[in-house]
Amino acid sequence: MGAIEICLVGLAVVIVSILCLRLHAFLGLLLGAFVVSILTPGVGTDAMSRVAEGFGTGCRKIGILIALAAIIGQCLLASGAAERIVRGLLSLFGVKRAPMAFLGSGFVLGIPVFFDTVFYLMLPLVRAFSRTNPKVYLLALLSVVAGASMAHSLVPPTPGPLLVAARLEVSLGVLIPAGLMLGVVTISVGYGYARWANAKFGITYREIEVPGIESKEKKELPGLGWSLIPILSPLVLISLRTFLEMWDGLPAWLEVLSGKNVAMALGAGMAMVQATKYCELKTVINEALSSGGVIILITAAGAAFGAVLKDTGIGAELSGMVGSGGGILLLAFVLTALVRFAQGSATVAMITAVGIVAPMVLDAELGFHAVYVALAIGCGSKPLPWMNDSGFWIVSKMSGMNEIETLKTFSVMLSLMGLVGFAVVWLASLVMPMN
Image 1: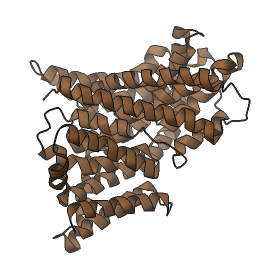
Image 2: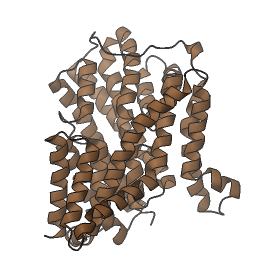
Image 3: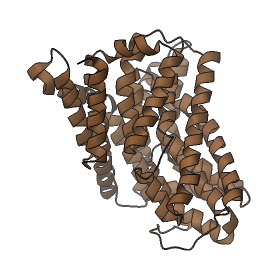
Image 4: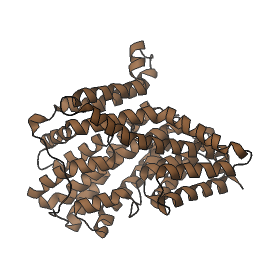
């Protein structure tokens, strides 16, 4: 059995396990990795050892970062800092431009906080705004979705981009600013579609019972600057390290502080200090590590899947078929989109696709920086969301929209952002290869 056939069997195992057998993504990826390892010639009884080695390598590269990101996100929620960011941007933009504030808030909060949680947090604020502005309800709602969903797929330390960067050996200091810049472009496209959809479909505010959060008074919330520091400080430090290394190098103290684990630890420490004033810190940390631990298991299993795929020789075989450069970019995008369509999860799609694409990227002469492949994978995780996506049902049920309305608003907007984002990546790889 050739490398491509083994790869297809592995993909089928992952998709069937998650979609048909309803297994947890961790188990589906681990089972797929084990099957691929067994089928790979010359592995034999060493199959499970190879899976375990790939799993351990994945944990080593991204485990601490995901745990610290989970702590930052949970502390921001518990302390009210996340809500303070939203209220601060609403105050800055004003009532007429409130949807733009929701767009920006969703993007900023989507960096350390998972998409579902951002949506839960911001929905009560969107509904409160829409009670007095019912005609722009859909615009405000989709603005949150556009911002949070793109940050989730493009900007570390969310788990998908983290693992993609690790597998492609792309520095976070390069991927973070690149993801932020592409994110601004794609959410602008999403916002434009949201404005059109709001005028076209006439979906106005609907009064339904939804689980919400208890909004705090402004005087109970942290200051806006303090609320933003735990998010911005790690991003700035990590990006600054890459920038300064291209010039005269780093001072010793900055070299230590700008290391990705140290920078994230500083952000987590600031978030915890802030949270102690507003909540029981031990409870918050336990909740963060409980959710973060699950994500670490999934991403590490994805790393194991990618490691055993590399052993099959899939990189060399696919390189001969698609060539290099633009062909690899297109393959990365399409493969991620297909896996997303098949099983629903954007994160699983990214970590599955990068396992196949990474061996090609590391061995080929791309003609451009590998960060473009990482961004293509991130954009590929957006198209074709439908009924097998948990995010689809969260948006549908909590917004009051039916399935058809959700398909023509939520699904079309995400697909459009992904396609436009890939077009921008393709063009940038030609104009600014950075190799």
